[in-house]
Image 1 (cartoon, one colour):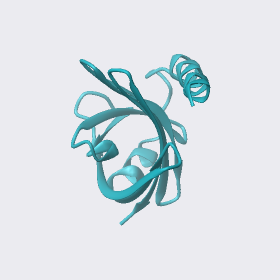
Image 2 (cartoon, helix red, strand yellow):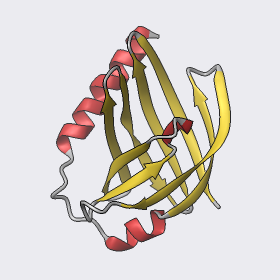
Image 3 (cartoon, helix red, strand yellow):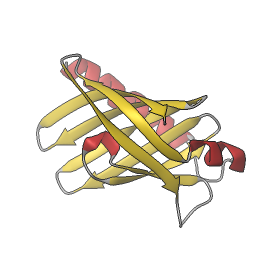
Image 4 (spheres, helix red, strand yellow):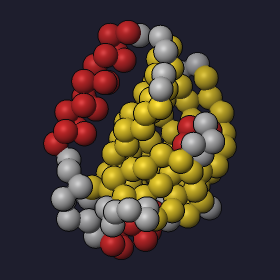
Length: 130
């Protein structure tokens, strides 16, 4: 598990460093993202649960959105929209959520790693727009 988590972290680091907020973002893509989604999430292939998220426009950048209740953690995670992908890197002391997501028609797939102290959880969330 540690090797796969390390590989995922390296891959996400490369993705995050190659995408910048200066990329052109189609406002229609952002508008289509906005709304409430039902989420089925699986972490480390053994933990799964359902919850909802809401995606709203960012007030600080035209290329960003806010994902409310990301990971069912009751947190608001900023995400950058780049073409048909979402990129996010959220950190608090001793808690991080890092990953990317695929933007589909009326759906999203979010991939992320949650790190709390020495605990690492690798998750995939399938989100269907309500």
